[in-house]
Image (cartoon, rainbow, N blue to C red; front, side, top):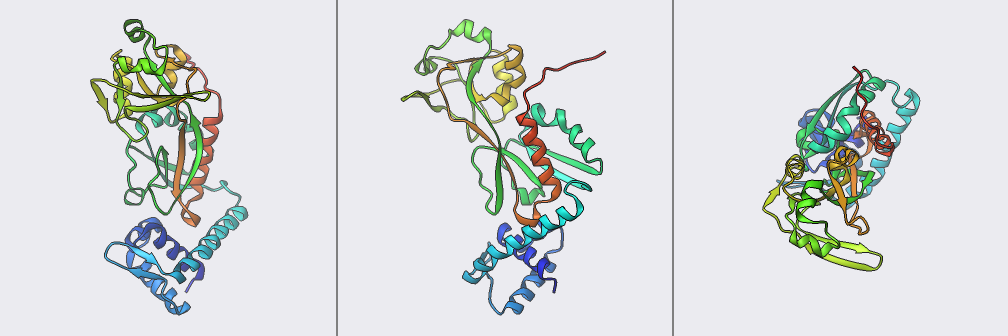
Length: 303
């Protein structure tokens, strides 16, 4: 039995919660995973997993083995990358997932740069504003904002943006500029009905706090819909600067209440831990992190 392979299989089962999900992560058949775990338990002479109809749960011995096995698998991956030269020979399919608007504005326009750096890599981009199941959809790395729900996944914060109140100049000319957060209650709001959105907000200014409940006739569960409604002058909204980055630069929308602060918006890269985090996924995460650290550049069109 290949000891490192057995460790990798065991770590995958604990992280994914089942033989079938681990098999999808590893790209092998479920029977092979089940056989490897059985052989590992036989060799160690202890039961590592408690099997139920829903999920595989590690025993006390399994938890102790898991912590050390996960470190061993990660160190083996790092050793292989160091020997080959990390990123020197990346190839194959990379499947990524990101929110529709964030990807359209901040990832897709720059994706050719990544492909130029790694010409043997193909990318499958899944656009979805929801936090879809990464294992079920075979995602190598997901870019997510807000709450993180994937157990067994590794999350790394790679960017942060301000959350702001904004609308079109035409809307504010009609509705008036709010002088304080409490004035927002009298405005029409376009509500982003996703985690990290909603109607209840708490602003801070120094040691002062102001809580506001937005009201509006339009609620949208996708960022593209929020953008369309705001750009049509239907109301103001509270979103990250990322969502309206081009329009903030060219003046199509403007921020208000800039002297008040809202909670920041974090961008996370979510990916399988240990060896299952492919070199391609790691390279892509670093690429996005570098993109977000660069100052925005105006578009240049040459004819």
